[in-house]
Length: 188
Image (cartoon, rainbow, N blue to C red; front, side):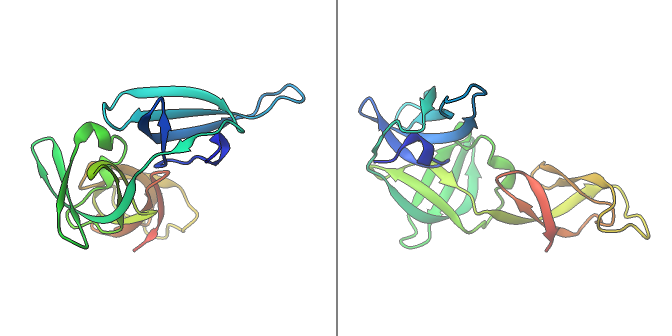
C-alpha cells in the first residue's frame, strides 16, 4: 500500500473502487513550524478519463490498483487515436490524443522504450523513456566561436516541440532531450 509521499507519475491506485493514474505530483512545504508536507496530486480516472485533484498528507495510504506494465513501440496515428504495438506479442493498443497530453511532442514513428499501463487489457497511459533523440528542423544559424556555456536559442523539432539549445547547435543536428523537463541534454 503506497503512501501519498511515495506516489509518482504513472502509478495506478484505487480511489472509491475505481483505478486512477497519477498524472502529476507537487510537494508543498508549509512555512509554519510543525506542519507536514502536503502533496497536490492530479489523478485521472482510468475508466472515465475524469480528472481529480487531491491535496494529501505524506502518510495518507492508497490501495494499489490491479494493472500491468508492458513494453510498447509507437507505430502510427489513426485520426485522433495513437497506435502502440506490444513488443512481445505484437498486439496493438489505441490511446486517445487527450490521454497523451504533454507527451505528444516526444512521439515519433518507431520510438522504443515506451512502457504502457494496461488495466483489464486496455491501455490507459504510457511512460516515455527518460530521454529521446530528435532532429532539429528549424533554428537560427550556428554562430562561429560560440562556446558550450554560452547563450541559448530556440530550436524546433519535427513534432513541433521547441527547446532551448546552445548557440553552436545547427539545423539538422540530432539532440537528446529530457522528456520529464523538456530540456536539451546533449548532442546525439
